[in-house]
Image: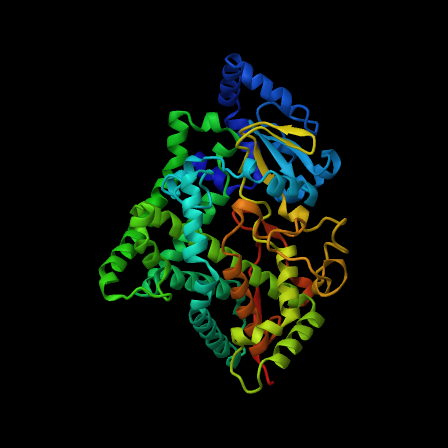
Length: 523
């Protein structure tokens, strides 16, 4: 057990070393035993895969894992530039052959031209436990079940009408944050902006999913702890992702699953209490557009044949997706603005000019004409999308992609980080330049899944269904942060001192927290 927990705490590079020395004998035994009984089909598959461009220096057992640094999206971008062709490259991550897609053209081939062929997901013991047997929409393999759940999420939970119905919830949560920041400003105190935005995102998604249930009696603290446990588990090192056969050996699988089972039990306690509360109050609650997600899912149980486990899995999906996207993107936006005061000033000028004079806060009605605000958010999503990769896709059938045959069962990673920094599509790709979305070749580029150089929410059948909800949340919070306050760094700190080091995980985040001093604006 201690070995598995240690693996999860290490960086990718450290994990490789640990695997090599501690698991090498067992892995070699398994590898050669499997090779001895290899079928003709698997040999044919290997022959097909051998024709794909791939880096040299593949080692026994671990494959190309030794070439992957602590930021895998950077390492794989650099490897693809050197050893890939046409935006495609095959790497061996342990025993798992993985197709890495690193160019917009190749991404379009996978996510549009052959969308259905690559619409599935690889199964995992850990996600099966956390997501109640893949009953969610995020990690579920492509199937009739996935299509039903996706329909429920897009039609009943995250459609435009329902997102608009939650407007008062968003504005109320923003108002609470602004009130706390005004208190800090009055005391001239530095604020942990990272934590403030995380709590905002957590509280907002709690309201959307469960009403005020999780905000009462300290339950939001339990929820935050569970969200952190989920992120550490799903974003940490997972032996099964690299050595699936080895990971399924009885003793090792028991060790791998133990932590997931403990977290799942904690989710059960919280979600059962949440659902029971909603069932008890359902008789007194009229069906209306203001119902939270749990009420909606309960009302659809008979129509879709949902069990309680379906409701739990979909709820965890909503919690996970709604939290990371909002608070991490907002934090990166504030970091970029404080590092570039002229951009912050330009944004404040626009927001304060358009918002009616004397108004206490920006409302969603005010935002429509704020084109520079939208450009700042786009540029933040381009440089700092929460995920460096899409969640892995899985080939459902043999497929020819730009002349390369991809066999059934091949795992596929879309390197979103590489797409959004492709110099063939972006001028000065490593610089934060919101103006690129207001004029020039990227003026009409958007993140709705049709511009394959810019896919922070993905594309195709597995595209994130919360794109509209995420967009309006980012806009209303960022607009109010720059409208209500001027911002400066804590005393003695310069903008050059801000650490921009990223940490890879389920979502990319900054190594250091962001502390800023708010000052009440005179406008």
